[in-house]
Image (tube, rainbow, N blue to C red; front, side, top):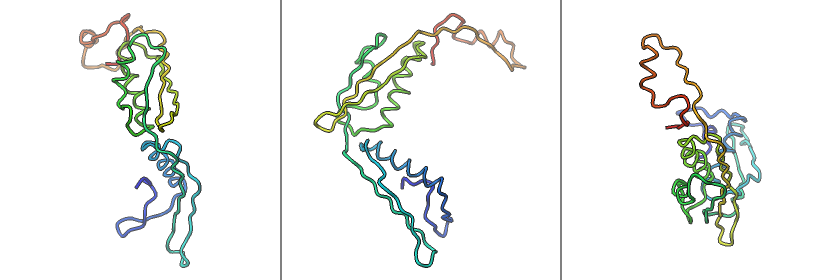
Length: 183
């Protein structure tokens, strides 16, 4: 099911084999494993063979799933704007849940990133460090670098032909000199 672009030939659609799409699908397969707890899953080998009549193709994929991991303890270092509890509440996962690479990336980019963007810290970076404990739980230690708070320097309005610029400006909720906020 994870092979989105490599499809079987049926009476509804053709099944032409495209090596480039097949390679992309192999990466999707590994992502599927990484999002379901198998962070260390690896493709051991794959083979493509044909029937004796060369009218059917067979694809075999050997995967080593590895160990299934869970999220463990979460800690933060370097944050001054938000408390560790505030950041933890924004993660989108809890201790004991099945590890997901996608959830971890969303926690960093969307959830924590949005908190900092709304306060004007557009250069803030959050780097996770994963450490395995004895219960196959991955403890995540986030190192936060907040950077400087960004201010609005100049607001340019271009391309308006029907509405006067002063009408647009009076509707803005920000002014030059204000701190940037994504929302």
